[in-house]
Length: 428
Ligand code: LRH
Ligand code: MN
Ligand code: MN
Image 1: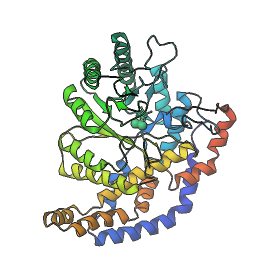
Image 2: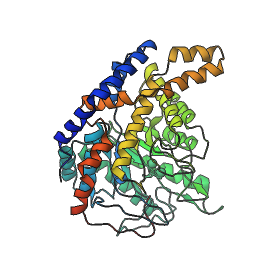
Image 3: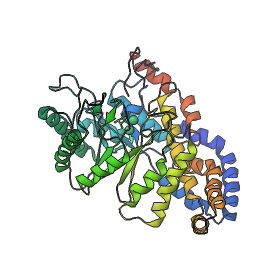
Image 4: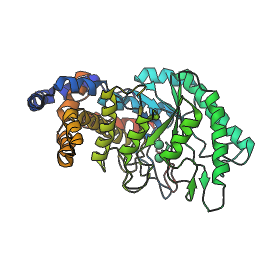
């Protein structure tokens, strides 16, 4: 099963082109009155890319149940195939982020498949939060911070192995998220556990090539429910400081307590040179892994407002990695990931429309109402014609989900990929 036929994309685009040109011209005129050149925004949006998570193209699940969809990828090669379709239609996801050992395969074969479907490789992700079949030491009571030195060493070695695989693929970063923590007060010494974690991570950093970065990802709770070793951005920042100049903090939007001001965390990490990147998703209650922008698109915009502000201020060394990290339970994962990539682009485009001179003036003169309206007027602008034009100009689909549905891709792969098992207890 190859990608979706380019003829089909072209035909679908032709049918929509006239309406798009009209919408784009109208928006261009509107933005011109605001002193904004629409072409410049379109160019920036076209150049923007977000990585897709390999684990996102299979149907997710909860600890209660997993309801598989048709044509789920059988292995990493099928996953790369699906990710290729996402990029073909959106033009917004040029790279994929792999998770080891879930995606462990001969790196040469992975690279060849990536080349075939037109994808590069973003950050590698290690997994020491579950036991791989046949591994010598269990992570039930932790990994990099385990009380047992041999277990810690095994976790260190696994992270080094991820770096080795990533090197062969052209990746330039390793993301480390651990589930280590405790479920009962008194179960673990907060201090000793954190010391062990830091010592292990220092060994991982030693194996990092000089042009690589290492991202540590904080998360408030789950799977440990009483305490978590890397629980918040404060601890994450301490880690990045301890580990040195190649170490940065990764912000997963779902890993904070409800109502936490994530955009402010982002600003702080930028200010102190430690923002490594993002796992975009959305949440209502916790680490829900819902589709990006599906619950609170304004928050996503506010995060991008900080990113664009930093970009325009020319903050030294500012180069955060952008990745999606979602779990799809009731939608076709390919559709969700396409939609999410477009939501991230939308937030970026809206943030580019903020009148920063006016905002700075309203801040300086303490005009709270006009300052907030300056952000709102950018957020309220319907930038869809910009996103669609960026896609059209690069040969992607004006309407990715429409084309995908019409292509019959899901049914075609379902015919060759056997149905996978459902039942209780899913992953992530
Ligand atoms: C943890 C997490 C982390 C993992 C992924 C599967 O909740 O966000 O990034 O690697 O989910
Ligand atoms: Mn994540
Ligand atoms: Mn998560």
